[in-house]
Length: 542
Image 1 (cartoon, one colour):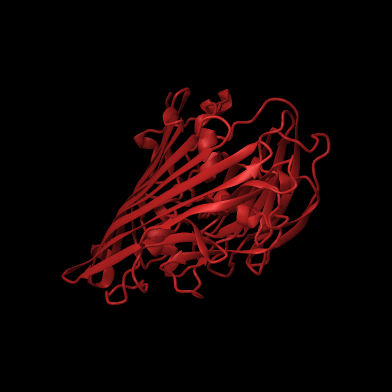
Image 2: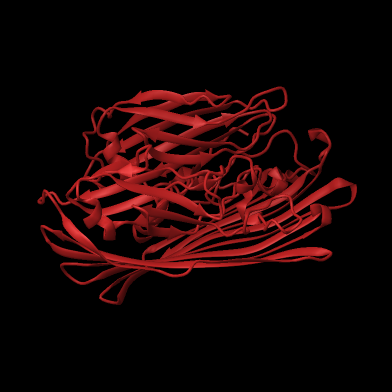
């Protein structure tokens, strides 16, 4: 089906907060007219050779009025693991200070292909990480938009561009991934963005400007590559009889260290790619949350600014708890966003508090006709420090608490395989300087509840519900000044016959997604429903 649908996701905790606390995304008359509905008669008995182009219920990127300039970053057809390499030059006619910068990927593919991971780098800075939908024999088209204004520093000069969507094309997997990536620059009042966007060197070192007053690291962490770490949430201890094993079990935690000292912790999002849970028919139209626009994990490193601002290189390293050192399966590229004090040549400071709780990570295997692994894990970290700026001393305290519980059940031969898991990542950042102390608390909750069953006549059925939720609360001097809630929920149920040619799978499947943002002055609510590749409902609330 050729009708194009724009997809967009929120990217990173800072962008999440700014989006939730900003104006509600505008919806054009054309977008409202695209809301599609179907009747039972419109839905085929099973999947055919064509289905609706991929789409999500996420809000579009709001765009300012006024003049804009567009630059093509990359245009390529990916058939192997050769990256596209090109050059970028700043746009003409829109200056070098922009109110917004929007990345747009347009893609098309036909035939047969797996889901594939990809990235876009500008001047070594990773500005976008994505995965791809799986195509119909007749072909699909899709697009993704992302607000990349925060990377404006990387766009002000000529840069090398690298893009890769690693792919394999042969007699079986015929889909060549054809993509175009553009940046649109909107002139107007300059948005508040980091002054510098840095990357960590190949030797894991970073040198920040000596007048840095705020430092935030972001990590595009993905477990992928086709091995068990692609499904890390399903791994079990070595003693359990299951196809994917890990040394301890499924608990994962993405840590960042500065000169060997733990500086930040985070729960990775349990992304399910478009071939996930052994059933691509779940994802042909509506992907799982974040699958097409992978959000980076953010760590506020401002308490370490006094140390980092000495003009020397410092080691900044990322590791994943539960993955032995040297083992492949995770990608963790790092960007570092820096805000500078324009009136100071050197901003001094000190780390005043570093308190790390004990990391808990327990997986208990219980044998039986239905095997079971119960996992509980968690960690807590508090760091605090100050910087002496031209506008006075500013103290920053960052507290983060992680928790994960899961129950994994399966039968011999894994003909039944089920997981019920919850991850929480609760972060609080307090900034105390001139004026009242300001606190932003972000409570993230990720959920996964699914079962795969292989039944009679080799019919494989997968039922799965995924949740991506966040509550962002802002306060001054302990008094709440704002609160916004995000809830992105996906549900799918699909069945097909395995171990037969594609035209004999007799696949059926339904899926739905509801994406909501609530808060004072902000309301967004969109729900999608599909059956056998047909979009049967597109409802918009508020």
